[in-house]
Image 1: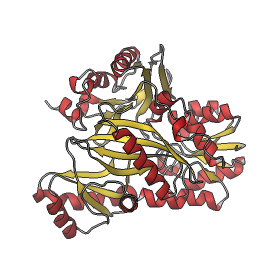
Image 2 (image 1 turned 180 degrees about the horizontal axis):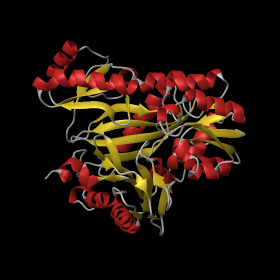
Image 3 (image 1 turned 45 degrees about the vertical axis):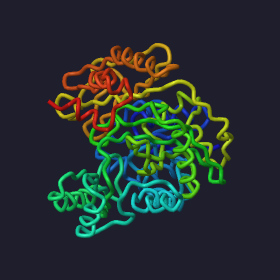
Length: 448
């Protein structure tokens, strides 16, 4: 196992990684921006290094400053969490060049899977089902012709996109050219790469993903599936496992596809294969996330497997000590993302001083957070305040427990608003309770 791990992130995930390291007897280094100098992970870690001002580009996205901190503190590994540099092949390669282990897949694997068009081609060769569309980036005329052949609506996606950004759904053929140019420009601005591709858009689909673990020695397993259908603008709000109301045998089939794809890609570590599930029960590969997911706690709750611990073990060179038959899913887990956003005002972020912060408690309730009373939510970063996770033997019991936990969760401040009440509204909707909801649910609830 590593002697010292630098955590190249902030917020709840940085604290989550630090806790896993503490349990393994691994020393930790927290890097932080100026406004995060008194953050929870800085107080918890063994050492801390200030790497820049508030702007992410000068701090948490500043690869040179992070690597310099790792060298200066003698860290032999870097855990990138999620977001920021977690899926940057350039950062992974820089770590490799310096002899520092990045907790994640190798740079080459990350590069192939991070490019969505390349990933589609790779998964197509591995036998995974794909939505109708192109396997390569296209120019505007070729893309328009392809869209016409596969039929509208279609979705235009940035090859280098991620986190729900760099996508545009087009329903009207007359608007395709304009939206294609707009998505190209957005992709160039966000990712420095204007390449885009086109695929069929399923307006009444569900979003189901599969968690995998691979040790790079030919051993790969999946840890079941998660349903991430409740979304707004491709941003997940509620996640659960197992996915409800799947046709018999489909979960096992999706898990086997994810493992096959991971082995074909030479994947190492914890990763997530994302699929769209059509109403007819057919599923289609979307993308691979080469990092720990925000929603990983629900998998931990039903399997009893610490995913961050497994990431660290694999990155340190240990083989998987689990086989597929060792994975047992028990009960149902739900996760709600408590964000500092105002659902009544278009989910606009609401940074500010938190005057009162009372997380939920009780049996089988988990709260992953870095927030406390007196904490100021900065305007510079993601608005996630906490992940509220519950477990119960059955889905209806898990929903009841989550509704109770949301009713207890208290966050107040002059300007701070949260998504808590809106999430309770989603959970109590008949479509969610009956597992008949699709990715359109949130928009339907917000419609006047």
